Image 1 (cartoon, rainbow, N blue to C red):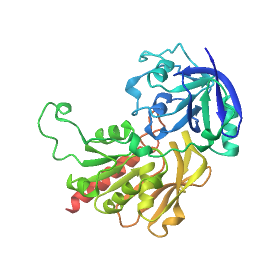
Image 2 (cartoon, rainbow, N blue to C red):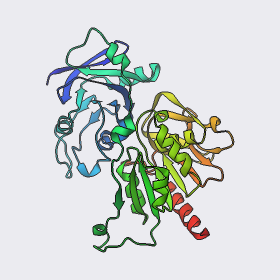
Image 3 (cartoon, rainbow, N blue to C red):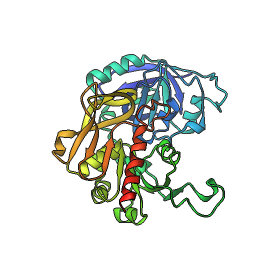
Image 4 (cartoon, rainbow, N blue to C red):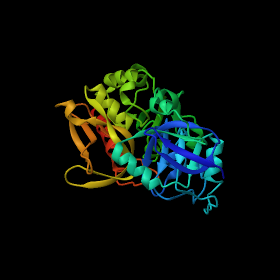
Length: 364
């Protein structure tokens, strides 16, 4: 294995060994704390533009399992302490290193990931470079910004689920099934799975679909997906949500949560180092749940005034984790209730969404 370097924008250099694609790459460096789920992490479109650092020391031990992928792989790089090159799992179809090479993603192993994570906690999120030679000038690293993220990862076509072939070969969908329109800003596949296993029919539409076209599909509910980047960039998408909210029950996750807040006059702020991992505690004041999260931005709950009520709060830093919109039949959460591979503590929110659609249908 060849030498490689992780160079932070502040000039710190960590030496390790090259894995994955043999190329240099700049990205926004974030750390994630999940002990499992590295495949779901690497294939989460919300990591677009970022170099992912895993704090758990051994990664790749159960190999490559395509059935567990959550979407496309849009990460800029991958950093681990120890990469397992001899995975042991009956479902494995290859190694993590081969996957990184196939996706043209550079990586580095053999560095003290704990030390790097501590730097990010102390100094905040930084850009970084994975390279074979340390450059004398780091200006390009400092200047890097994630732009156009949703446009680069969001869906491009309308998809219908279940398709006729998946429901016994018939030509018609179940007319009694609640119909959900899922707006794809970079949606994880398990959002779709969670809706389908509850008996919903789902139409997935691209991120740039107009509100008029969404409502023309006659949805019983609208789902706003997760996605990458700065939420304030998505001016068109925010405007469409402003037109949609209040028409039918609406449920937003992660970026969908942030965009809804902006549509309703709220503000978002970039966190010092974000929340990335499967062990983030959120509370409603009575109960506390462990959640999976992946975001650098958060909604400023107070900026919404009386428009929305804070429903969940991060038990570590007090940031906004959920909102309910008064009189709008809409709620959103910052965390991932569909998390795969877990935790599944808050999957009940999909049942709540289903109940909202049923109650709305009963009113008609």
